Image (cartoon, rainbow, N blue to C red):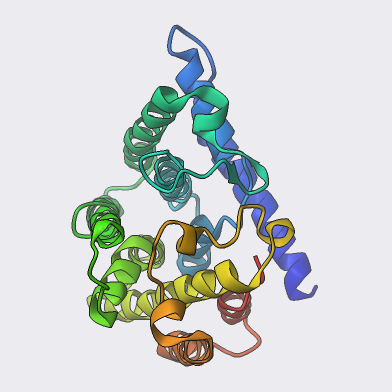
Length: 297
């Protein structure tokens, strides 16, 4: 079985896991539940839950302990996209080739759907305690701690704050500020995914630190590639408008350093990310890294 065939099977399995944890669309709050599920079922690469599962498996994890965390991290990622698309943020009408949540359900419901997904993510992750053994309890608690920090003010939200303020500022941001944004807004959830997979499998603190650094490299390269695609791709390939960074006066790695250097940095980071985990070049995880970093959409 080649990489693409394996990837398709793994994504299909992740879709089943995600659907298992989605809320039922019923009750007086049904509209927000529909909006949540609309957002969650819009497709996508399912990168973060896949990294949770692949790292969990690679470090000897067995059973379904990682599944609630796979669904939870995708809920957090999705809520961030729902809020990113709002008029007060990026004001995008399309995401993955479909109308964005606030366009379909209204701005207020878009805000509430994002809020609901964030809260429901932790409710979902906490359900891991229901099936965990007493030996696994500390692992679940540590994984929750990582998820909360990487998603919060010292992680993704912190990066989002800096990103918003940089767009509003008349002064150009420095390369250091840009890396802060990329590290926190994008890499933080990738770090959470890989660290949680390892922690749930029982890795040492040293191994968790290597996972965190590898995920940093992967996340930064992933975001730089995103910046590259916003310049070089098409609406048909991306499923969303291109050139939105320039439209929103957003500085990127490409606008600061140029396209050639951006591509060089993507290559360097991808090689380092794979080397840190001592991955075989033909392993699924190494090929996954490369497919994500050098993607065309």
